[in-house]
Amino acid sequence: MPHPWQLIDSAFPTGSFAHSGGLEAAWQGGEIVNDAALDRFVRDSLWQAGYGALPLLSPAHRRPERLQEIDAIADAFLTNAVANRASRAQGRAFAIACVRVWPSADLAGVEEVTRRGCGHAAPVMGAALRALDVPLAAAQQMYLYGVARNALAAAVRLGAVGPYRAQQLQHESIGVQRAVIDACADLDVADLAQTSPIVDVFQSVHDRLYSRLFQS
View (tube, helix red, strand yellow):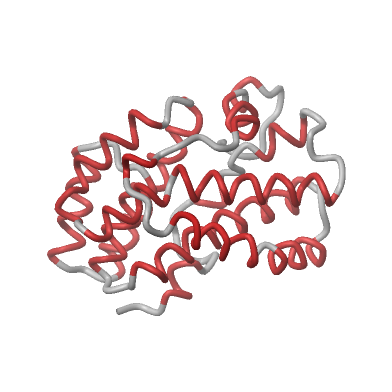
């Protein structure tokens, strides 16, 4: 089993830092005006991941043979075209990176399903991390950590917050991550929900921004 830290390291080539998860549009739209607004955005994004991603990641981890089915459900759930595209890009990149770094028949199977289907990030990560023997609890924690880290890293590159304050906010988000896991760890695909429509709306208008640093 690889060390989970390697899988969430910024050097692991998944392309996640090319995406802001709607933060860039929110910042340009005047929603992110101070640290408190950024903290609220991160918290909303974490709860949305809890109800909109963990119910896809967890069942794919528990039963990776369902990956194709769960991937199709993810595609139907992600009606936001920008979020859908970003999820596909990150899921496919994660599968490719895993199978190239740790070649195995199980990971090759995940990558094959990803190529034939949509390859959405949450279910692909669930199945791939199962193939790498990463426990489900660790997989859920890794996913949520990445949600907060990616948003705050994007905020730093946009100049919305300084790197030291961003690290403080990352640390402060740990309590929210634990609360999300407590509430959402056992959810299945039938429990999928959109809890942060404002974040979704901002991400949906990303392609219409006059200038863009990120892909989503």
